Length: 212
Image 1 (tube, rainbow, N blue to C red):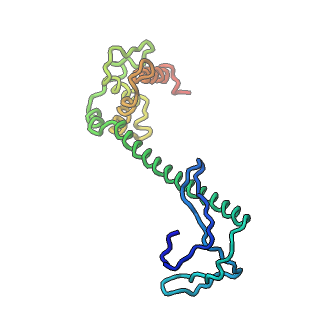
Image 2: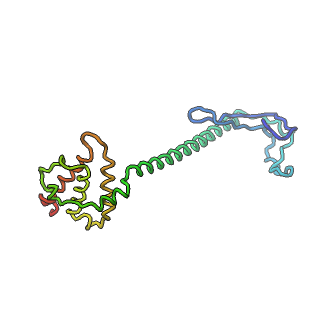
Image 3: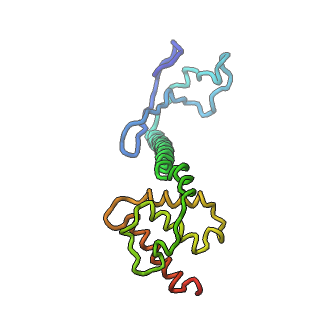
């Protein structure tokens, strides 16, 4: 035991390891020089200290088996407390990393404002030009940029922009972001989503689903 008092003498000591739930030793707790007095130690001590050392004649006590068991239980709860604190810190760090990763992903997965502004200035052909109301519609003759314009035309012809007061530039950026987030896979890609949207558009306009 490291004690600043050069006259300190260790008469009795009880040590217990503080373990993690996986068995790793996190620290050691110890009790030194058990007092045989039943009364609490004196609070009067030397200047600068909170309590004085008890007289040496009271150090004759020895730690019993019962005290050893109680101290072992205390060390167990101390280990659980430290382990929970460490796990909490790990969770906080993981959450912070997750937020950063999400922010980075959101930044890269969102269309640039200048792209949306440029698209908002483009002329969007009519649904008749794209044949969007036809059930035999095919997107094979449309470029990727034209499919984006066709989506904007469907939003416009359904009256969604006016009904929900959608900012047109924001709508352009949203459509571009949706297209950007689709992976280049064989089936569930942007063009598949576009074809599904066109089918629903034709059903609304030709099948009069909007009237029901």
